[in-house]
Picture 1 (cartoon, rainbow, N blue to C red):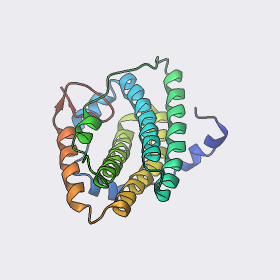
Picture 2: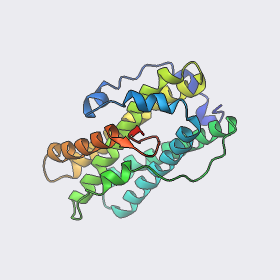
Picture 3: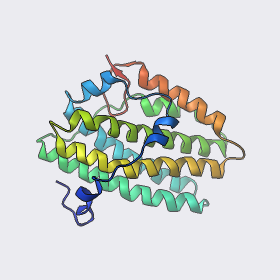
Length: 219
């Protein structure tokens, strides 16, 4: 698993502990146990949607780079993020193939749309809101990777090890987005972050008809 040149060090890196306390303190809730218990029973959907999430994360960053070409710090940070997200997409596809799962298009969860519906239409708040949401999504991904490891370590040890490996990059992506939001905002972003984190908490804790990587409590 994960045998590309860039991946040769993955196994060694996974042994290092990544402190995700700042992310757990940042988010307003933890992943519900009901979601974790369901995830291990539907690995097919979990992996397919995880791959879609990596692809969408890269696509979202590309759109931001084209929309705001004048922001050099944004271009530099997001270009690195894009490279990592695409690599992660390829790695998840490898695991999907090894499990004999057919990768396909599936309906997205309500999660991202549920956050983006509140984005301001006016600049620079539109940019700041988009960056805050990007940071929240990366933080939730990191929190879920961490929470899934104990549930996967016995039945799917390679996947559990890979999710531990992803913690480092996802935690950095979270900080990159939030730092950029602070940089391009005209004032403090605390109030706006609180608003989106409250909305995110609702999406995570309320019943959800679709099981996806970022979905709420499975119905």
